[in-house]
Length: 336
Image 1 (tube, helix red, strand yellow):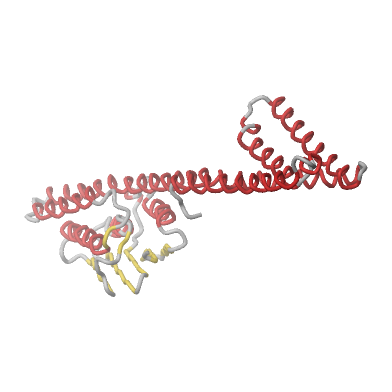
Image 2 (cartoon, helix red, strand yellow; image 1 turned 180 degrees about the vertical axis):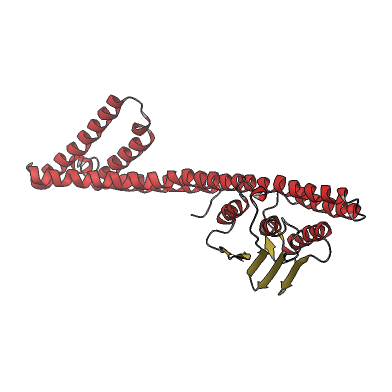
């Protein structure tokens, strides 16, 4: 349902109530003009009175009866409404047939009851627009809060890995430590500046990934088999939710370079075609020794999948495949 403003909903509600009451009053005045004062009985059993009574019952049921707390008051009001409709049905049956028959009276009664319920349905629907709109707004705010929580879970994990890398460089007394700190500072600025944005230019997200890969190359050496390639037109017009792609890159380095094996590799490739983004990450897989096993269960992929479901419902696919020597993650997103 399209989300409407509170002012629009109040206007719709007011126009409906005003129009509904105006039509009924106009019909009532018109009937009274032709019937009164000569034919009171015809006036009391006319369609105008029927519509007025049914409308009053519908309004009373919605705005008064259903808000009562005492059950006996609700039952009393229901009996009163039934009595009104039954009386109206008896009078109409007598006016038309000059007698009262059960079958005919019951037919009129059910007709009036159905008319009252129809009027009530219209009043109920118009007034429920505000409730449905508020529910939609709350659901949207809840999804934003949930997505923000998942996004925030990424930042401590990223910082933990980054400072571990910085610690490794400091132990080696590497000359690249200062450059590492500079790149890390730039990445931290991106983390703080873009955290509240729903969408950022794809170029900024890729620049963030490039800096991350650059500092990992400093950590593992320039000869490390780390590649990042792009294909297609990447410009500032393409927007993406921030910090989505980095999760797959982090995961690749976590599992592809946890040893000093010379065959370790991480290959990252991004392709854009029209509004479709294809992002694939491949990393090496080695058999861990028992002392290298990590007892912590990784949450990165699970969090990423949850964020994608919130941000790109039915507009993404995330596939992972693991072989003996390789792990492949492929993400496809339809960018809005």
